[in-house]
Image 1 (cartoon, helix red, strand yellow):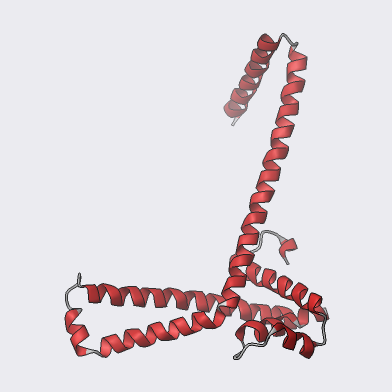
Image 2 (spheres, one colour; image 1 turned 90 degrees about the horizontal axis):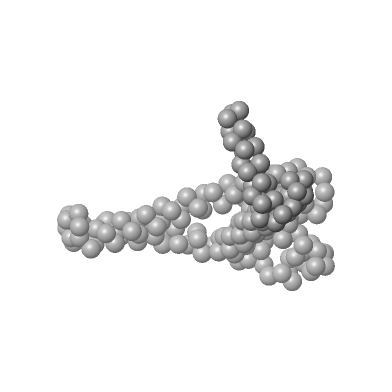
Length: 202
């Protein structure tokens, strides 16, 4: 560790000397300029890191919103994939064609089964997150948070789903409050699904 710091110190002194030789500045002037450049670089690095974290968080929220909007489609996809796989396996002729490992039929069935299994995992994760969110809302003392699960359920999960006007009318809310609550709910579900960076995410 000491060698590491010694090397860094030597590199710093060498850089100061080179800067002084090039510019004609004194070592003290060169050190001030280097210190300023280092501070600017650190500030820039911090800004870029924050921007990257914000972009990642925004991407997670967008992904969560798409999952919620396609909740029923994902469910139907799993049902259709499972039914299709079972029908193919019940077909004697198809089973005979599948006996060859490299057959197109075998590959098609494997692809369908893998896609269905992947969707099922995603479906389970989403439903687990929604269960957690329901408990989160139920145990929050704030009325605006307590109603958020009901809004998500009515908008994306219930069959048939309710449109915004119907939900607003049932909850006796302004549309602006509905959109605010839905955005906040989506962000919270996103944190449950993809993880929290810090307590402020909640």
